[in-house]
Image (tube, rainbow, N blue to C red):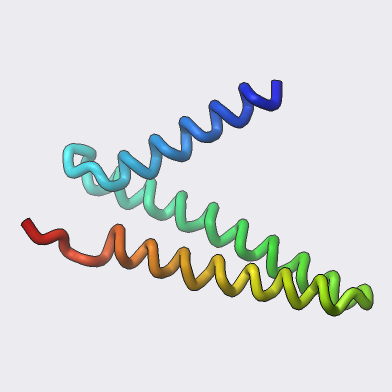
Length: 92
């Protein structure tokens, strides 16, 4: 059951990512897909950051710090990928 759930979610998210880059998909649909993907990614980063803050609050400072560093790295690399994928003009 876990494999089936993972397969379906992977198929949906990969499909959304590819459709958001396809020029044959209408622009409003592409923008909506990009917004949904960005919100999902922001939610994941937020949950990791919240877990880090809760770890620090509970007195587990090292684990909280690691979680906050992971959240910061996710944010940096996610923004870099977003800019590279959607904001830079493709030459050629």
